[in-house]
Structure formats: structure tokens, C-alpha cells
Image 1 (cartoon, helix red, strand yellow):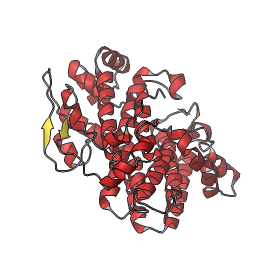
Image 2 (cartoon, helix red, strand yellow):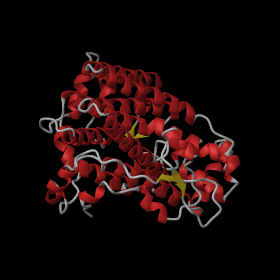
Image 3 (cartoon, one colour):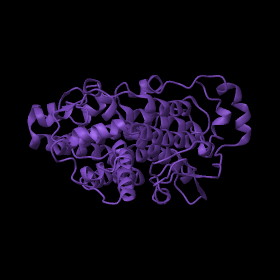
Image 4 (spheres, one colour):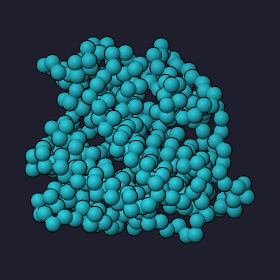
Length: 409
């Protein structure tokens, strides 16, 4: 359903305080660390609950400052009030048409085997979700910043390409760490060529991405995107550990989710904003949109591990449990079934743990609670991006949040 743009900037998470939330964790301390849907020091309130609540979800009372003149509000009214929100994929299609060809040029080497390894996942069959967000955010920011024309700057186009390269390199390394033999409906690189060559291929993709990043020539952008690689490594180490305390465990989970998934999207959005606008508040809008969409994306991914069949996912279902990982649905289920606590601490390593944990999750409201949490992250992403000047690209970013929530693979 189309959303009148003139109301978008008024969207506030405070409207959601009428909804009763129970049994899930987002701490007020997460906000101060930038992990919750709201970052910053605004006064916050705790939502009411009909059940005993171990965790608190917090929202701000304030309205965001509008970043474009009120006179612009009136002149754009007729353009966006009755139009449907644009389809993100069709709107970004032109900008992404040569994405994989450009990546292959960056990865070109004379050795046939290394070239085959590096090109393996860049076959054009991926969703290109991250570059799509980057190009839409870049165009929305170009319009917001009154730049001459809406075409992508060369540096912004490079950031979109680099985001896909970093993401794919992380998948190659993840598959080695997890011992996965299937990715995107086909055999993994480590299954085809072995772990050593897979590690080297991932390293090579990262090195090519780093060289492309250096050529952008903006030291701030280099610093922002370098943070992504640090976060990926720290997130992987966090995934290897767990927390005894239930509250700390959920905080740990969200922190890990940001570092492993959302940091790349958030910092890529920040990078394209830096290239066109000098206002730190605009940079923060871009970052917050990417962060909240990224966390929601991973929360939905964790739900799909319990609700989607393996053929649809392109990877085995219950994969996280088999790897010893307690994701959102499991952590919520643990509140209803304390028996899960000991399984989580031993990483589902005893015989029958995976099957029993799976059953507990299905009998609990863990899936629903995780989906509900993802919804609130998407609501915050909408609130942030709605502060930008109206444009088809901004509207597409709004629609994208709904697509994240309703995806089935």
C-alpha cells in the first residue's frame, strides 16, 4: 500500500507504544552502544506488557528533526502523495546491470584456477541485496543534497561493488569455518576445491576490494569501510562464544548480528553519504537505515532457518542449531522452556539436542517474537530514511523494509 510521503517524516516508533510487547530483549544499554533500533541519548520509555518481562524494549519520545525546508514539503506534495512505492529491484536494475562484470574485472588474474574460484559466486544469480541498498541510498542522498543530477558518482558506484565483494569473501570464509557444503543452491567453494584454496580465494577477493576502495581516494570512506572488515572478524569470534546470563546472551546475540551482517550495510550507506554530503546528521541517517535494515534482515534469516524448507533456502534447514548457534527464536523459546538453557551452553552437542531444541522452538512463540522484533527494526529504518527529501529512491528504500520482512528465502 502506498504511503503518503507527507506523513512519512512524522512516522515515529512512539506510535508503536500502543502495542504490547513481551518476552524479548532489547536493552536500554543497547541504544547507548548503537545496537538497538534507537541510538542516542533521548529520553526513553519502557513499553507495557501483559506478562512478566525479563527484557525491555525502549523507544524515544522525540520527533526527528526534518532535514529539508518546509517549503519543499508543499511543492512535492502532488508528486508523491498518490504514487505507489517504487519496486527497489526494478529501480536499481540499471545501476546493477554490470555489477558482476565489473567485479570480475577487479578479480581478473592470469591463473585459470584462481579465476574460477573467485568468479564462482559472482555468476549473477545472487540477490545483490547489499549493492541494491547502496545505489538506492546513494541516489536518494544525491537528490536530498541538491547535487547536480541524480546519477551515481563514480565513488558511490564503487562502494556498491565493494560491498558485494566484501560480503562474498565473508561467505567463502564462513563456509570454511562452518564446514558447509552448500551455498545458494550449489556446492560451496571449499567443497569443490578444498578449504585451503577457499581461504585463499576469500583473501584474494578481499584484497581486490581493498584496492578498489583505495582508488576512491577518500580517506574517510576508506576508514568507514575498513571498520566493516574488523566487525566481520569480531562478529565471527563472538559467534564462537556464548553467555551464561540470559540478558547478556541476547545482548551478545544482537551485537554479533550487527557486526556480522548489519555493519556492512550500515557503513556502506554511510560511505556513499560521505561522498555527496558533509552533514554528519545525514551520514547518521544513512548509517541508521542500513543498521536497522541489516539487523532485521538477519533476524528474518534466523526465522527462516526454522520455517523454510532446505530447497527454498538453498542451504540445509536447522543449520544454525547444527552449528551450535542459539539465534533469536531459540533465545525467546528458552524463556518458555528453561530446558534449552543447558543445551545452549553446550552448543547442542549432545545426542538429540538439535531435535529437541527444534521442537521447543516450534512449540514456543520464539519465531513470532523474533519476527516482531524484526518489524520494529524495520519501523525504525523507515523513520530514519523518511527524514530525507522525497524521491522514488527514498520510497523504494521504505518499501524494501516490507520486502525484508516478507521474504521467504
